[in-house]
Length: 381
Image (tube, rainbow, N blue to C red; front, side, top):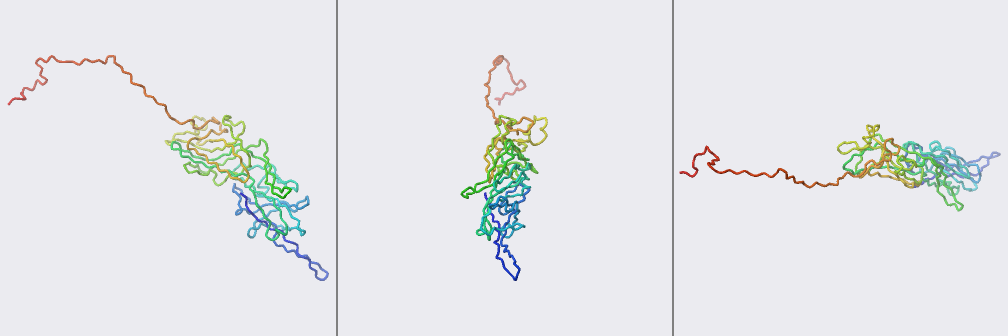
């Protein structure tokens, strides 16, 4: 999403006045050019509301910059102004502005803006997701006639892709407790070419060129474990990742240790049954059985585009993914393998007859008195 901004234009030069033999040059300062960077130390997205400033390099027809990497800070109203004032040429020639935020120091890499080429070279997102910044940039033209009073118009674009990871589980057999997230094996270094104007003055968007074979994984560890429920919960603790746009090539799980450096998303998780039995980390792991948590991963193959936010929701209701390829014990193995169920038969009874035929005895009946102590005639008077 682009953010709309104004920067103050340079005021026109006032007329000369003469007094006796002295000439005095008066300048009507009006509104000066202004920007400054959002010096975010956390992975917080930049908006019109929270942008405090940015940096600008300007050119006219000269190969030398009109000014370079000038910081513009939020001033009165919607205008951004610089401490060192610059003004438009009085002949109405336009200036071309290349604006960006945050600062070169915060971004890293090498910012090289000349009249013929405008690039950020060797950019690498910070390894710690919490320290990643939202890189914004724009190209614009301004002149005294149209922009001197109200400020030239800037519409910044987000140059990176924003990544958020959520998780949920409706599983009634297992409990899942998550202690961290990982965005694994993605392009980690590249060169950004600033937006430009084509021959017909149409603005062309900025582009990225990734450094071949430069891959990295980005982790975020939570202060406290999150127990998953049916409601999806963010695992980023407010620090969404800001990474280079790219086409992800998914991890091939047949390559259990990820020899091809395929992309995946993982969570640092502990899995137990509802009765408390340990499931993952695997109890058979002699080194990690008592560690409490281990990484569970799933391949991803998304096309990340600049200025777009991607929200991944990992659903553990029916499974748990694969052992992270960086784990020492059984990397790439499915964590839960097949539903436990049974194919049942009951054997037929086998009749055993040997020795089971029994003859019932009888009595001859002579002088048979079953109760020899009873001498009373039950039918007597």
